[in-house]
Image (cartoon, rainbow over all chains, first blue to last red; front, side, top):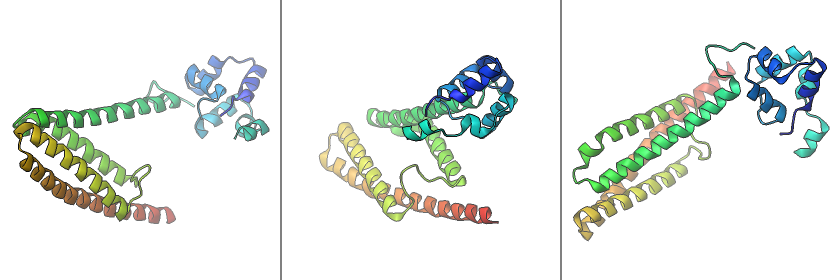
Length: 72
Length: 152
């Protein structure tokens, strides 16, 4: 599972720290960090909450890109 | 997404479940080891292992009931007669070996130990095979009921 750059980019666009995003979706900073690092597969419920806060679609934040396909 | 009645989020919850699962299996095997050691060490084993045996049986029965209730048999083994025979043979062989050695250590009688081993092998095989067959039938019934419920 590779790093999730999309979340980091979307967060930066909104000038939001990892801690702020974590608080908004109701998880710890460690969990948010693990999601961004690709170390934890979030549930669809949490994914949707992150999308809602960042104003992006599921596909934009969690959709598979070409680099993901190549690593499989 | 709001936190509900818990200080943990979903990842921490999953990690805690893994920790608890490892703790459970450690306690399970440690109990079995304690029972086996006491069986070898003490002459009158009934009183010595009563507490551990009750806890061990409660844990085992709890696991079997919960797994069957949820339509789960095993991660790798399939629920079929061939598996039941192999598992029963393996467990009865291990039991026979353990009780034969334990008997030899305690009483120093070779023929008696061999007889103990043979009796244990037969009785454990019958009991294990019977328990597995009954559990498998209940499991199959449960799975078929769950599948019927899904169709409706």
